[in-house]
Structure formats: structure tokens, C-alpha cells
Amino acid sequence: MYVAYFDEVKPNEKEGQHRYIVGGIVVAMSSIAAIEAQLTELSLEVFGTSDLTADTEFHSTFIYSKKGGFKTMEPEKRLYVFERLGQILSDREAIKKVYACINTDKLYAGTNAAEHAFMHFVERVDNVIGKGGSAILIGDLDDQQARNMVSEFSRYRTRGTNSKYGKLITRIVDSVHFCRSHHSRMIQLADAYVFTVSNGYTKRTGWFADGYRKAMAGADLWPDGYKEWPK
Image 1 (cartoon, rainbow, N blue to C red):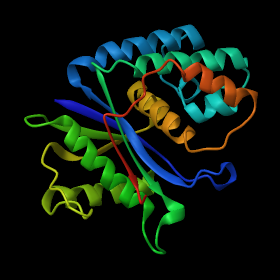
Image 2: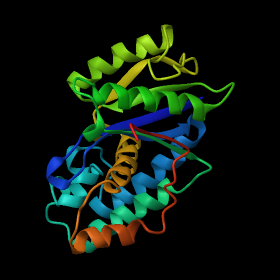
Image 3: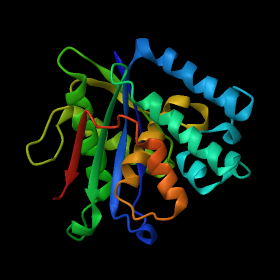
């Protein structure tokens, strides 16, 4: 049994990022506790507490932009946090990485980028689980998008996806579940992965952008399943 934790990154025109990305991590239930223990250890080191609050959340955008619990943190320490998250994500035995990227600047008018990103992500998660496997989906709670995803996912399980070849989703069970990201270290780790994917499509420059790339250089972030569309 697996749990697929996921998050999304919306297009950011100011940073030259024209992609809608849904991605995350797929983890066997037997491995979750060990991964959570590593993240708790990092929380104790960085914040001095293991409490799950908004101020102790490993939110990659906040780490990068010096916001929230990272507002007064020195740049070197923020880069260290990214490096540690990258090391945890590099465990290919325990963590499978999946994403779907929709090129919004290439879509026909009226095409729903969010729906397509979620659909292709679900298809890849279903593939990664493999025959005989099963999983549930847990995402970062976004009230409006959460309602849309629940409706779409129900359709994938009963009638299949509406991609080019279509796929009946049989290995992901129940509904889509949601949780506030500051209540789940695993969603925070999924956020860290999606941030790395998004960063590859941005035009961020400057000394901190260079520092981030250096901090993540040693991490094994190659996806186990991905889709970029349209080409």
C-alpha cells in the first residue's frame, strides 16, 4: 500500500514560468515513519521544536523568499534546509517522484491547465504503483481546486481519464484526501519536490538562485514518472 502526497505550482508570469505543475512523492506506508523521523530531526535542528505549526512548516517558497518562519533566518541556513530536503528526497528505495507539467503558453484557448495537470499526474502515479499495488492520494488543501479534483478523480475511476489514450484508474482507491500542509511533513516534502521541478522552468537569477542550484546539485531528483504537455 502506498500514499501519494502531492502539491501544485501555478504559472508565474513575472518569473517567466508558464507551466502548471502537479507533482509529488509516492511512498510505501511502511517507509513513512522513517521519512517523517528525518523531517522531525530537521525541524528540531532548524526550529528547536518538533511541533507542526505554520511557523515550523518547510514551505519551499517561504524558504526561498525569506517569509514565514524563515523571515529572519540567514541565507546559509535556508540553503542548508534545501540541501537536507534534497538529501531526503534522494532515497530512491523509499520515495518515488512523479510530476505532470502543462505548458500553458501552448494551450488552446479554453483548455483547463489545472485539470490536465492533475489528470496526467494521476495516470503516472497509477503506473508507478505497478501491478498488484494500491495507493491513496493526499494533497495540500486548496478549497476550490480540492472540490474540482475530487470530482475529476471520481470520473477517472469510473469512466477513465480523457487523455489521448485514456486510462481507467484502478490502483488508486477511495477519494482524494486533503490536509493543510503545515499539518503534514510528508506534504511539505512533496512541496519541496514540486518546487525543484518548478525551479527548472523558471528564470530565477542572482546569488541565492545560484546558491539554491548548488545546494540541490547533489540530490537525485530524477522522476520515476512524468508528463510534459503539450510539447
